[in-house]
Image: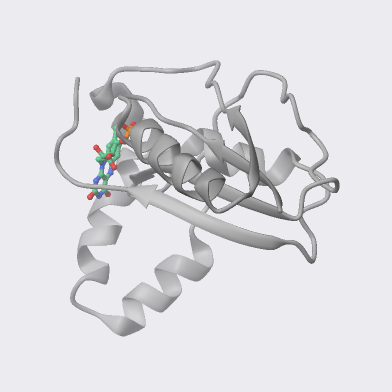
Length: 138
Ligand SMILES: Cc1cc2nc3c(=O)[nH]c(=O)nc-3n(C[C@H](O)[C@H](O)[C@H](O)COP(=O)(O)O)c2cc1C
């Protein structure tokens, strides 16, 4: 298969995982292309959290109430960041697209913008690869 792996990585953990998976897919005979998303508004860890800080208390309440969680998710407005022009802005030519990034409370802001901009995703096989955890580098 002809596979496109698209990812955003601020501190390199997602990038390492992407290249591990790429190697694995290639040993199985697939041809893998890479698109790295570049944020045009990258900030420090605290600066990134700041852009979405007003939502954090609402996420906290979601841990305790299903009723609240459902309302919070259906009303949430995803934060996005501008990204550099894409190499593959139309992914129709690929058999499969794998999209990766770090968990940033929700979707990492450059990935959210990518999902809005990219053409040709409809009806395609999609893979998703996310890293998370507290090894946040400032
Ligand atoms: C703005 C921001 C928000 C984050 N939010 C979460 C979170 O909600 N849950 C979590 O487990 N990790 C969170 N993290 C940690 C990252 O998901 C984790 O460090 C990730 O592996 C970093 O990937 P990268 O090195 O590819 O950028 C956050 C990090 C940043 C910078």
